[in-house]
Length: 307
Image (cartoon, rainbow, N blue to C red; front, side, top):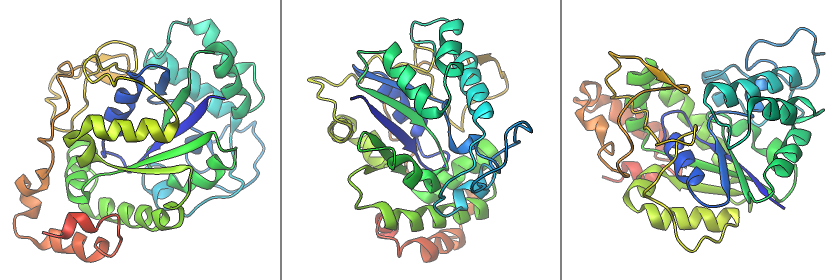
C-alpha cells in the first residue's frame, strides 16, 4: 500500500525545500500546495453555503489554526476541498504527466478525500509515497493518522528566532505572533512525539547533513532508495526548483506556475542559520530572552537556547 504523508511545520520553517527534496526522489510525489483538508474545513476559510454545517470548526489560517488544540470530527467543506485541490494542481502546474481533465476526474469523481487519495493511487500505480505540505496544521494530526498505519506525519522545527525573522520579512507577521504560534505548536508536540506515525526533523540538520537526514526520512516513510538525489531538485511544476527565500528581491514580481521567479536551486546551504543575529530587532538581546523564557522548557527547543 502507498503511504500518505503530511509535511507540516510553522510557516517559514523550510517545508517547501523539504517538499522539493522528497519530490525529487524515486517513487515519491509531493504536492506543494494541494489536497489540504484542514484549510478546507469550516473556520479555516470561507464555507461553501451549499455545504451543511457539522462537526468542529477550525481556527482561521495562519494564526488561529496554528494555535488550535487537536480537533475531533472537523467540519470539512468537501466542495471547497475539491475546488482548491484542482486549483492547486493548475496554478502550480503539478500535472505529473496528466492533463487538466484527468486531474479533474481524479478530484471530482469522488465522494470524500479518501476517494481522491484512492484515485491518486490508481492514477500513479508506481508511486510509493504521496506527500502533502500543510503548514500550521498540527491540530489535524489525530484526524489524519486515524486513517490507518499508512498515514504518516512529518513535522519540521526551525530556530524560532530565525523563523520569526523570515516571517516578519516575508509575511509582515510581528515577532509576537511568531512566538505565540510557536508555543501551541511546541505544546502539541509533547502529546504526539512518541507516535510511530510521527517523525520530527530539524531544519538546521536538514541543511547541514542533508543526505543523512533524508535517509532518516525515507526510512520513516518506508522508501528504500539505493541513492539519494541531491542534484536535480524538482519544483512543483516538474522543472528546476526555485527556492522562495524571504530575502529574495521582489522588485520584479513575475509569477511562474504559482511561484515568484528566482534563481535556480544550486544546492542546500546553511547561510540562513543564525539570521536573527543580523536582524536589528534582536541586537539588544531583549527579544532573544523573551523567546528563550517561553520556549526553552520544551525539550524539542532546548537546543536553540543552550548557548
